[in-house]
Image (cartoon, rainbow over all chains, first blue to last red; front, side, top):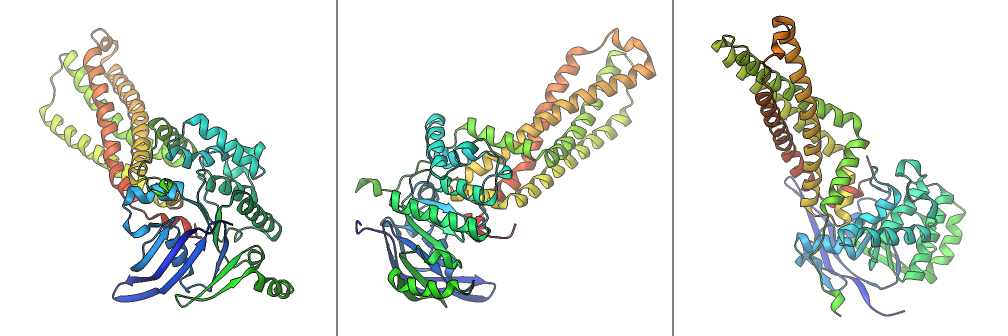
Length: 244
Length: 201
């Protein structure tokens, strides 16, 4: 693996102002994620997990400290540059799939490429390639409402890959799927991670996810509580699976 | 590594924008038709008043000056109500589409794309509503004159003034629809992309 960091956080703090109250969501987080890693971010709700996740995705800026995505300081970017970053460097996958309901599967996958300035033909060709990779070659003309949850998430994965991003950010990608479909989606993400060397960062509660992760960041009270390597996890998952 | 440089160029060709907003109208036919109907009624009223005044002139009838002022008031108010109706329907459609707008922003959409989509949508609805309103207004007022004054209305039908009034009414309808959409469009564009992450619908 090439040792190259795609995400670097240095003493990141985030304070939310709620009326007169100040809530400190992140209290000095530092981490580094390498190219091609599969990362899970775990933590109870209210731990700052989502805040950290949004910041890594360029959706939010830190109050203190710095976040680098592909060696670019996110806090320094203007609105146009942020849009550019979201369009080409980051692919988003959501818990609720978030396909645009008025567009077909192919059009959904094409949208980020249209934003990136590809011609219609180029975008169409690439979208059919991507939909084939996620196993939906026959569904290009289907609207999201005509697809199952798992299929919609596959379209969303194809869409996230549209502009060959460095990072795929997956927010509870299996949260709205049943066990079997969730497993398929995790396997798909893992195989894309291996084949395309795309970094996958996911916020999750799903224990199935841990099994494929290279590292897991446990967040508690706005800090990284511990970082586990895959080798440490294997055993735990074996014991956890009994509880499911 | 030069590919690490951050660029700025993000594009949405007009053709694609038109397609997206047009599809949006089609998929949300219910809400769109309410907005369109609002414009239709306002413009139909305006046109019927204009046609009535054109016919009165062409038949050399004595116009009632008192009536004219009242009509002007009524038309102005009905058009204002139309604008508010459009703004209201558009605001609801923004709320309905929070997640969709957030997702588009996550995919790299700029604020101006979102504004463009909403304005285009309003433009189409304004155009359709005004065209239908012109037809309804012209036909109904002409029919009223035929019933009250008889077929002589057609002997000297003021085609040119009626046509000009209709063109003017379409322009007014489109402009009003766009005015009604400006605030909702700006509200939509200012939305944070993080909204897309929210699980609740």
